Image (cartoon, rainbow, N blue to C red):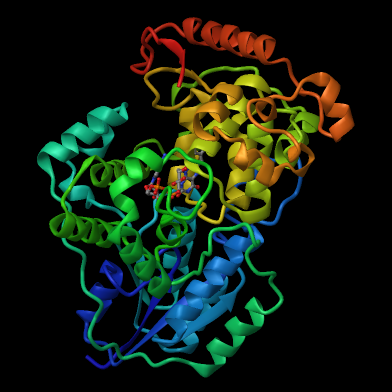
Length: 492
Ligand SMILES: Cc1cc2nc3c(=O)[nH]c(=O)nc-3n(C[C@H](O)[C@H](O)[C@H](O)COP(=O)(O)OP(=O)(O)OC[C@H]3O[C@@H](n4cnc5c(N)ncnc54)[C@H](O)[C@@H]3O)c2cc1C
């Protein structure tokens, strides 16, 4: 009774459904502080970070991501006593905690290797000062103890995971926002956050109107569940627009939204207006997110290995010129370039676009998939270690995809999902004078005139090389690997 405690925030920037916050409250503290470290692992590289698998140096977090985090912190700082520290967490946090005479620090448990290493280092440094450190699970639909299998037996295929959890487990209701917290806003922190935000450029004009924070995130979920969600299944593969997909990802990634709260809202929307294929599909996608979290707990550092979960020895290329062309949206494949320019400008691009560009990097350029994953890591506004590396493993064919060699034909994809060529013209001004179908792949004679590059690789030849190399690596891998089967080889 009467003690002072702190919540160390990382990817849990909210007050609703926050098990670590609830655990801290159960000790009836007299005062509760919230602390965020502006440094590694979220916004800077540090002592426990892996050297980024990138040929060029990038800041750890893009400007849109920094802005989103700062806005989210500001939203919290208006409601509780938030403290902003800068530096290595294991140095600045324990020193600050001791100066504050804290009795305990609480946090949401992370298990990606870097995040876990930081939590462990902080725990040790706090213990050395006689301050206890507690972590609680959070940020997932299920608790580990709810899974119908020990995590070592996590199914290797998503479908099996989905079927098992859907059949046997219920998503628990979200925990409420505590009605009263012994924590009052600090004007000093509000000023500091404003100062950090001021020099950052606003979100790009073409961006979805993101606004970081639990308040804005919950408001958007309610709006989306009023109407757009009911057609999600039909629209989700589009490339542009505010409501074709939910855009919940940045709020989920930094924890302004808890997936259990989103799920509860989805069930409410279904009660009011009726469940359909689309409402189910949104849950289905949240299950993908869930799967990748448990995958990281199961496989640890393998998530980041060149050979992935299968130890596949593939001769990935390390060609910086090709990589730069991919980053800059100068590959000569319009749908790839449009998506990459969108990502560079806004920090976001749609799921279909992410799949197409990841396929292009791994199946046509045959570049080290970790370069692609690392670039996404620094660039995405919604970067989430589990979803990013899990999806990249999958797209590179070294993860849990039963199909193995998955590829996307950029021209066919553009025809299917950008039928008028609007998305391409939006991001590639050089091609604005062209209409569909020409805009999908302009003929050579036009390109020089328009100032648009020739394709940097020949489509068919590059795909054949990748297929051949991939299958040789798979077949050369003899036995003992459960993931090896006779894969189909087909376009998504
Ligand atoms: C190569 C690659 C890298 C990716 N990196 C990230 C990442 O760093 N952070 C991230 O949040 N998502 C990542 N995704 C998944 C997906 O592309 C985004 O979650 C989605 O595009 C976000 O838009 P949305 O919120 O409108 O999604 P919606 O389609 O509305 O889906 C709702 C929610 O379900 C979850 N979800 C949807 N698709 C996936 C998926 N394939 N994997 C995991 N969760 C999913 C997300 O939380 C999303 O917000 C990646 C996908 C690929 C192919």
